[in-house]
Image 1: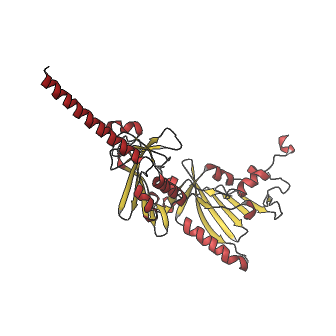
Image 2: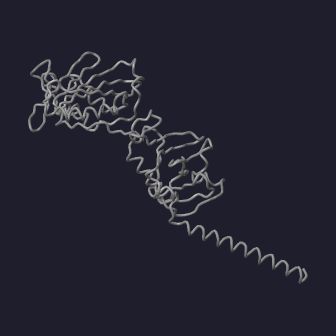
Image 3: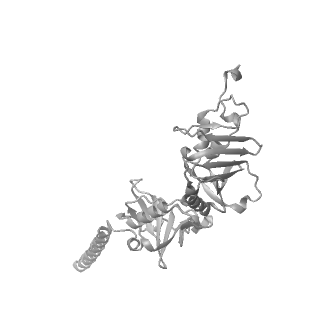
Amino acid sequence: MNTKSLGILIIFLLVGAGAYFFSAKKNSINTSESIGLAILPKLQTVLNDVSELQVIGANNQTLSTLQRLQDGWTVKERNQYPADISKIRSVLLSLAEAKIVEQKTANPDLYVKLGVESVNQIDAQGVEAVVSYSGQTSNLIIGKPGPQINKSRYVRPANSDVSWLIDRKIDLKHEPAYWLRKNILSVEPNDVAGVTILLEDGSKLEISNKGDEENTFEVINLTDPTSQAIEAELHQVTNALSSFQMLDVVEKNAFEDAESTMKVNYQLKSGVNVHLTAYEVEEERFAELDFGLIDDIQAEQKSAAQKYMDELIQLTSGWVYKIPNVTYDSMNKREADVLAITEDQLN
């Protein structure tokens, strides 16, 4: 190689090295400047304007759609049943506050390692959050947990090639039922005046609050008045509405031809009757709720009782609720189920 050729080679090497150094420095600057920035910066300023949150899964399938209507947040896939606002608020705040910890790959072939491939793919692992506000959207693909499983996540803005590690565990649940407002009513045993259970076989159990300071209960229609009821069994019945939550919700017209397996009436000290009609469908338990005022309600109670009843009717009218089996079983009682076994019965 002559001197001229060597000189040209050296020039090319210097130019190439300079270009590489400049490119590396530029990428380093871009990466370092991004650390600590919000992954969805615009969302922080428009949280009060958010009107919809969509969860989209593999094959571009919409899994859950949460919509903000005039009366509040609802779940579209459950015919606009009220949503749990606290869960929606938590996710939106996490999306708005999530900050970049580290830049990851921009190579589409490596997205699968982080779970941030496009949800258009039939086997996509992550989900895409689509937040709508004022005619615009912010889209973020949420992939696998990061190194700190409970504090980080791999994500990629849907309109970007670059993926990132963020400092939030954003866990978007897929099922519409998760987003429903689960709490329906809460009635403590000391608020219960009496309970009547009527089962499909015609058996009837009537339980009454003795009215003492301990709020103990008794069965008032015992076949044998000398029999003794087990307090714990009665407590299961009177405590069934203390935190009455549903697992899912179904429109009432789906049960038009269904035969009920149990009817339960809770008479509350407030002057309200809670009527519960229960169903069993393929080993799942459902309950329909209705409400009314007791016949001899005191005048001073009526206004408050009416308001309480109207609020419950507005929430539950037209719906049947899927309930936990344990809640159903706690009310599904016959006389034999609550009686203590006597010494004579053992002999």
